[in-house]
Length: 134
Image 1 (cartoon, rainbow, N blue to C red):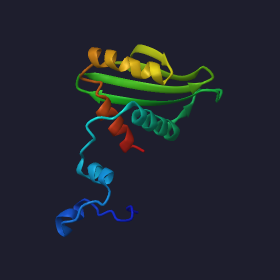
Image 2 (cartoon, one colour):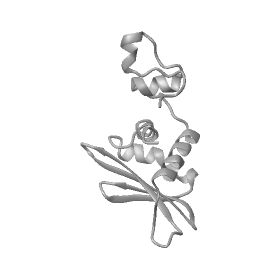
Image 3 (cartoon, rainbow, N blue to C red):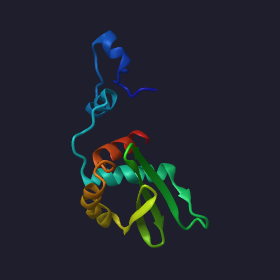
């Protein structure tokens, strides 16, 4: 059921009205916010993790994986919560590029990943797409 005050995008042509809330209007029109900060990225990834996590056997570790596919290759972001803490494993074309512990290390690795795989790693696109799956 649509949010109260929300007009479906297809009705826009018929009624001339648009969505009431700016963030909904942006999602319906396909526009993304130009820049997403680390706090927003962390919130989106944590929500994605809670929705899609799978156990790693003994139920002491849980993982969720996001795969970004492009003509130039595949980027996989694996977030695992285990006794060691929050661990990120980053794969490019099925090859492990990094294993990082904690959010700070994850965000510090972004520039290196953008330099090494600019065609695959666009954080704004990745996390906007991830948010759309929630």
